[in-house]
Length: 308
Image (cartoon, rainbow, N blue to C red; front, side):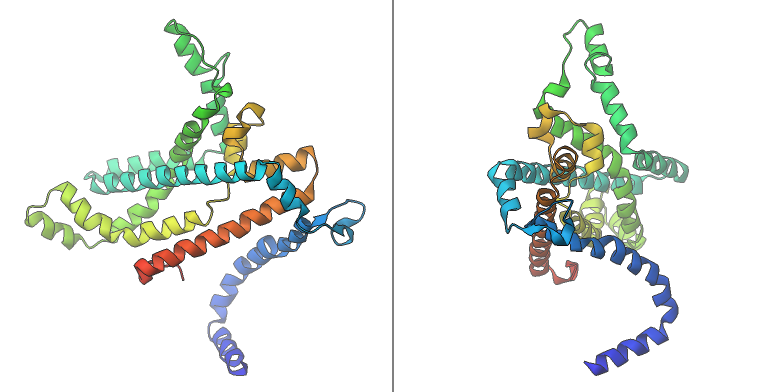
């Protein structure tokens, strides 16, 4: 053990400039990620504001029991996993397709313009996206109902149709993120040796064969890494996306309520810090278990593609 500390000290002295460069990031993670973990004890306490965090009485697993006995826990877990799986498939799938299409374009100017256009939605705030959605689907003045009225058809109240919102949310999520994700895959495709494509073309391979036998196998490590990183967040709903697009609409809770929106609403309505801490703790534990299991599966298939 003593030898390890000595070696670590030597390494720090040798690469002190690099360690100083990474120090702000380490401090940021410690302050924003590790220090707040002390608040996890609220999940096992009957929190009272007058007694504080450490003075409140312990209540065991009562907060978890209430979360799941009411049926809310299973609903928000199901919705969170469902939306994240759909978003993962749509955004990553479209990103790969876009990256391949752009990499096959010949004109440099056209390629750069296309990349800029598909990347632009990433910079648009979810607040603005929520305004887009409202102005499209609003019952009285929405664009969609305006078209339906002009065609002599009846208006449709989308905000009272829970089943359609998974489609709407996934479409807007893919629109916003596929351009950003495609940049990562474009970078991976750019790193492929051009001689492989030239040799395949000389052998008579068409564009689809080159994509299938060269491009996709070469970007496989990048795809797996991206999937592993996304799977680690499969129980973390994008609060800003759900809150700005759906809002606080009770008619849509069964279809759109996820763990993050439930925690926010519980804090705003009931100020129940114990139950919200229990929901967050449950969310974090499941995320950890899922990413460990998926990484283990990937490691068994091909150890080189695993995260650790």
